[in-house]
Length: 256
Image (cartoon, rainbow, N blue to C red; front, side, top):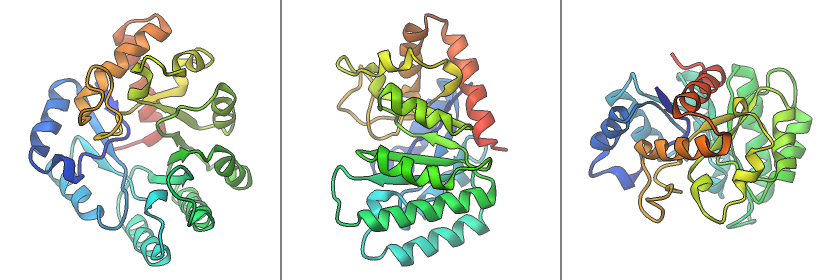
């Protein structure tokens, strides 16, 4: 069994064939799919997908940094209510993104810190979105770090030093997706610095499709192409990648 630890199969890109996409993943051996929330508008569709596949799809709850806008306080309160009243495997997708827009950078800091604190209070891991914002995220985690802080740096494409810093918190994993299959990606060399026990697999569907589907809509069944690339990085069998990364995901997210 493989685990896609980060997939947005509830978004509009799958409105025409959502059930078929999920079934393709299950048939390919990707039997568990973890769903990170995006904003207040995505909550309902995420919950609907969980209802359709309760043994395969498990939700997270969080406010994505790209969704932090002038309504952030109201939206964050909605997320908080959902989080404390619902049943979720993680607080996510949360973090900071300074790539597209820095208008609400201070609000992103506040929203990220609050959600980290809620995760610790609830005993849940966090799924971190870090784009052009490692230093800002590390600064907050340094202040919030204790033995309750666990999570994953989703779609990790950082340097070896940033990877070491992330793993030094303890209880953290690096989420590895389709970028590892790209020819110009330096991620292969970076990962050689870390044991496979530090990694979990993800697709970030519908984004970041692995080769040979790059540029097309991503889906959870494509996770196997990411796993196959890891067999090259670690010079091991696909079964080893499956066993190790699934064990890592179970230890971090503890779904039931």
